[in-house]
Amino acid sequence: MKTRAVIRTDDNQTPIRLRSRLALAVATVGGVGYAPFAPGTFGSAAGLLVWWLLGPSAIVQGIAIAAILGAGVWSAGVCERHCGRTDPGHVVVDEVVGMLITLFLIPVGWAGVFGAFLLFRLADVIKPYPANRFESLHGGLGVMADDCMAGVYANLALRILLALGNRVIG
Image (cartoon, rainbow, N blue to C red; front, side, top):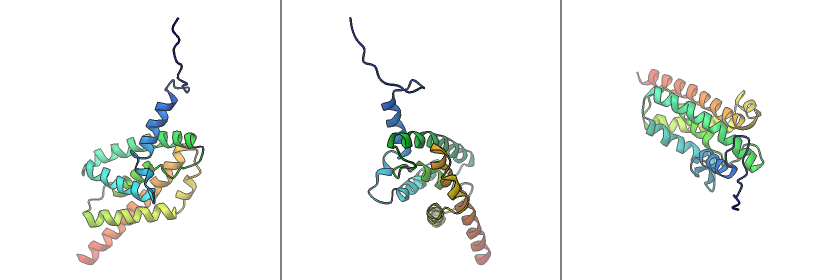
C-alpha cells in the first residue's frame, strides 16, 4: 500500500507554502522590497518602471492600477499573516500602485516623473489625513489604502504644480 504525502492546505485548498511564496513575490515586487535600505523608495522606483512599461494609455494604466491593487491587497494580507506583523517593511507593492496613481492621466516628461516621485515619497512618509487613518484598515487593504491615498495627494499636487508652471511660463 502506497502512502501519499499530505500537503497542508488552507480553506481554499491551495498549498500554503506555494501561496506564501507567490504572495511574497507579488508583495515584494519580485524581491525589490528586500533592498538593504529604504525599501519603499526602491518600491516607488519599481513603480516608475511599471508606469514606463505600461505606456501612455489611460485604459491600460487604469486596468493595471486595479489589477495591482487587487493583487496587493491579497498578497500583503498573506504576508502579514506569514510574518506575524502589520505592514511588513519588505512589502512594496503598495508603493508601485501609489506611483501609478500619482502619474495617472498626467502627461509628463522625465522632469515631471522625477517631481511625481518626490511628491509621492513625501506624501507616503507624511501620510496626511485621511491616509494615516487608512493604515488601520484590516489586513492587506490597510497596507494598500494609505499608499493609494498618498498617490491621490501626489497626483493633485503634481497637477497644481504643472498648472502653476504653465501659468508662469505661458
